[in-house]
Length: 274
Image (tube, rainbow, N blue to C red; front, side, top):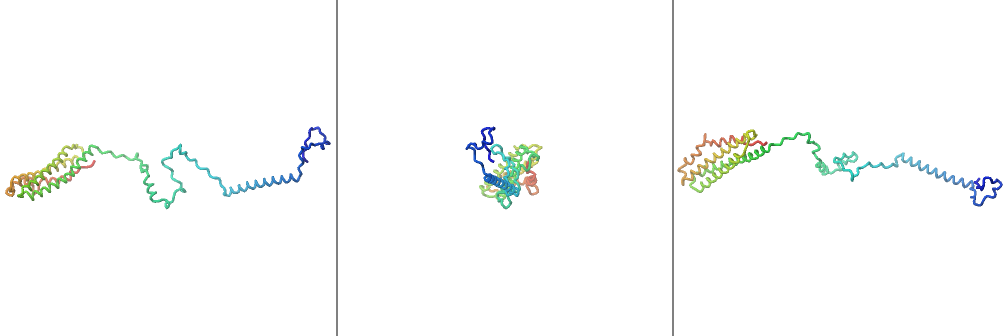
């Protein structure tokens, strides 16, 4: 039965017929039942949708996106020098990586990190003075080979021309011998002005070099002296023994003794690198 609005609690039941016209009309039972049915249908539908979504989540058709890992803010944090190796599911297969890329990447690897230097003993630096001595002696040692060859050629020229009737020919070869003697003296002075201590690893080599340069000076000196004698005469063939006297003076068992000494000493004259 619909509600009734009264003006006072003391109004009697016999005054119901005087209800004002503003009271809403009563709702029929059929209309109320239809509204309840609509509400029930809506509630059932909503429950069915919720159940359906729950089932779909359970079977894995829908899934919530995984939250992205916290990445460092590039504007605030620097990237580490050594990045962690990629996960196995992120590594490209060998077929997908070009060979040039592999070679380029391996060439950029800093090998210093593989072999820490703080665990390796450092080799002592060589004495600078000894290095300077070696650099000087090795040049003088190499010059000896050139001088030996030039002396041998000067001896051949002398044997072939010291009796030549041409004064100009003999004078030209005599000048070559004098020039060679001057060159040997220049190198020998460089050796003489090089200071080598007795404790130096090249002390013995220095002495051997000194002997070899002395031998070269003696060998070319007698040739130059013999040329000077030859130039004294228009016909040197008449004075052969006199011309050859300086050379014969240094011969021992048919060989120049300074040449023999040079051959024995030269291998010992090679300097030792510090």
